[in-house]
Image (cartoon, rainbow, N blue to C red):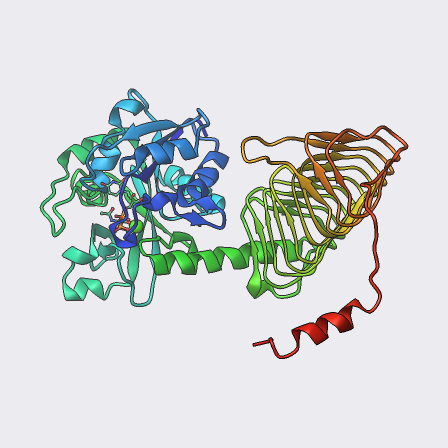
Length: 464
Ligand code: UD1
Ligand code: CA
C-alpha cells in the first residue's frame, strides 16, 4: 500500500503508569508495547512508517535498531495533535493518505486497518476514524453527532459535559486522513482545553467546518482498541493477549494442561503434539519442537528445543539449545550458551553454562559444567565440578568421547581429557589427561576398628 503512510504516536510519558520507563517500552507478552503496533503496521506494507518519540526517545530507538522506520522527535509533549504535526517535514510532498496509530493500543488488527483504509477509499473521504461502543466508557474521547446522526466532533472526556460523558460511542484513536488535510488542519488546532494540549481529534471538527467528507468505522471487537494508560490496564491486556496466544497454540495442536498458568510470549513457536504443564513460561524467541513434554514450572527464555524433548519439573533455560530426544530436569539450570546434543540427559541439580554436550552424554546428578566442551557418550558422575574460575579469569575444559568421570571429581581448568579417559571417583585433576588413560589421586584408605565407641565414651556428658 504505497499510497499509505503510517504515523505511530509514541512520545508520551504515560504519566498514569508512574514509571521511569517510557510507556510504549513496557513489555506486553515479551515485547515492548509499541512493537505490537509496529508489527501490525508493517504488515500493511506502507510506503513509509514514522514513529513519534520524545519521552525516553533513545531507549525507544534502541529497542528497534532496524533502519526501516523514520524517527521523529517531539521535544515537548504538547499533545497528540502537536505530535503528528512534528512529522510534517518528514512527509514532505507525500500526497497519499496517512494512517495514524497509537503506540499504546497494541491489539489493533491488520484486518481492521485494511477495512478502514478500504472504507476511506470507497467513500472517497478525506478523514475516516475508528470508533467503538463501550458501556460506561472511561478515559476515551466521545463521538458527538448531530440529531441526524452526522458526525459533529470528538470531545475529550476531561472537556466533556456530564451529558456528553454518557455517550457510548468512543474514539478508538485510529485515523486515516489525506496528508494535505491532516497537516493543514493541524496548523489550526488550538490548545484551549482542560489539559492545555493540542488534540489530534480536533481535526475532525476542523475538517467538517471546511466541508470535507468525514466518515467513521465501528470496530467489531472492542478489545482491539483498548489503550493502555495504567498498570492495571497493562495487566488486563497481558491476560487478554495471553489468552489469545494460548488459544492459537491449542488450535495448532499443542496441549496446555492449564492455560490459565501458561505464559507464552508473542514470538514463541511450538510444534504440534507438544504437551505443556502448569506454570510454564516460554519467553522471547523460544522455539519448542514437536511431541515435546514440558512437565511444569519451567522458565525457558530465548531457547531452542528439538523434537521429543522432555523437560521435567522446575527447569530454567536461557539462551540455550537442546537437540531432539534430550531429557532435562527436574531442578536443572541451563544458563546462556548451553548446547545439548541429541538424547543428552541432564538430571537434578545440574547447572550448565557455555557448555556443549555431545550426543548421548549424561550428567544426571549434582554437577556444575561451565565453559566446557564434552564429547559424545560420556558420563559425568554425581558431584562433578568443573572449576572454571580462579578469581581472575575463566578457563575452558575439554572432555572427549566415551569418558567416565567418577563421582565427586573436580576438574581444574584449563584442562583437557582425551577420549576414553576414566577418572576415578573423588579425583582432583589439574593436568591434561591423554586418551585412554585412568586418572586418580593417590590416597590411602585407613580403617580404625572400634573408633566410634571410644569417641562417644570420651565425649560423654560434654554435649550441650
Ligand atoms: C487519545 C485520544 C482519545 C482517544 C484515545 C484512544 C487525544 C487528545 N485523545 O486519548 O480521543 O479516545 O486516545 O486510545 O488524542 N502522545 C505523543 N505526544 C504527546 C501526547 C501523546 O506522542 O504529546 C502519544 C502517546 O505516547 C500515546 C498516544 O499519543 O501513544 C495517545 O496519547 P494518550 O495521552 O494516551 O491519549 P489518550 O488520553 O489515551
Ligand atoms: Ca492512551
